[in-house]
Each structure stands twice: as C-alpha cells, then as structure tokens.
Image 1 (cartoon, rainbow, N blue to C red):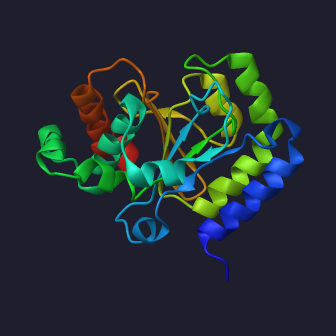
Image 2: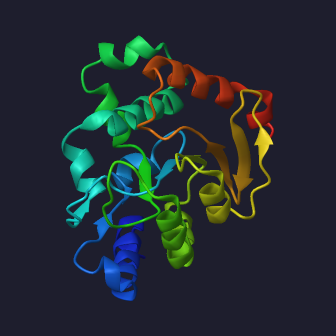
Image 3: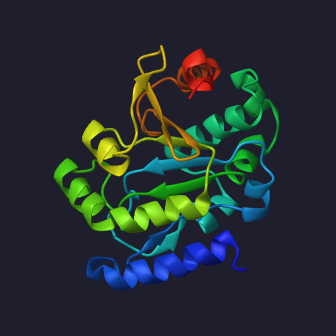
Length: 217
C-alpha cells in the first residue's frame, strides 16, 4: 500500500496535469515528515490561501520546511503547532528549547488552496476561482492527510465556507468559529501572517482548544 506521501505525490501529478495554469509552476505541500506526523499526539493540518511566490516558481513546502523557518508565516505555524502538540506550555518555552519550533513544524501537515504563487496580498475573486477549480482535488488531499484538527487561515468567510460547505460553524466563546469536518475538528483562525502579537495568538488558540465548545465538537 502506498504511503500518504506517495498518494499525495500521485494526486499532485494528476492535479498539475489537469490544470493548465499549474503546469511547471505547481507548489506542492502536505505532510512535512510522514513518520513524525503518524506518531504525533494530534494530527494537525493547516490550510492557507496561496504561496507568497510572485515569480511562480515550482517548489515543495515539505522540502523547504525540513531545512529552516523563514518569515513570520512559518514561525506562527510552528508556534501554534508546538502548543497543540505539547498541551500549550508557556509561549516562552518554545524559544527556550533549541530547535523546538522547527521540530514542531516537522510533525504537521500544511496545504494551500491555490497551488501556484501569488503576491503578499491575495485577491478574493481569484482565490474563489481557484477554490471552485480545485475543490475535488482539495478534498482528496484532506482525505489522504486525514487530520484530527484543521486550522484554516483563509482570511475570508466565503473562501472558508466554500471549502467546507458541510461544516456547521459555532462560536468557540472567543469570537473564533469552530466546527467539524468528517473526523476533524476545524478552527477558523487567523492567517499566519496577520499582524497579531505572537504570544497573544498562541494564547487565544490555547483558550479555544481548551474551551468546552471545542471539546464537545
């Protein structure tokens, strides 16, 4: 039986072939390290909009994130992952342990809705076009990854709702909506590059995960 990574690679090959605009520019994503992901106490999937890659070069987040943390985007995902994987110790503990943040990043999965690069500021209409074009592939990717917790950073409710039309959203008690997609609990959270204090967003995520509303999903 093929591994999840092999299944994702097969999916990406079909995906790139099916979408003419993606050919030669496809940016892969998925499970960063399958062995670590499979053994993680919680299987986490982060979903964002598109790579910040205006040159539209092909690449693979799974390879990039094996090597380094770069830019606030990956730092925030690493911090949130560390909290989810370790029952949210104090924020300063992440940076008191050498390599703790990037190690947390290696235990998770990540995917973009649009598979080619865009600029730092995404266009809503363009993103909705790619969502509609990719919806079946996106759900195949989520099914292969098979997470327990999904955290969306899509910024716009219509993009989130279009990706998860089955989810009945409810308040977490902290002005962040939560719901359930199949076997996964979903948090409609901030985009990782949003201008929120890192420790504040970490604490907010902790409060959401520890809320009765989230536990009862």
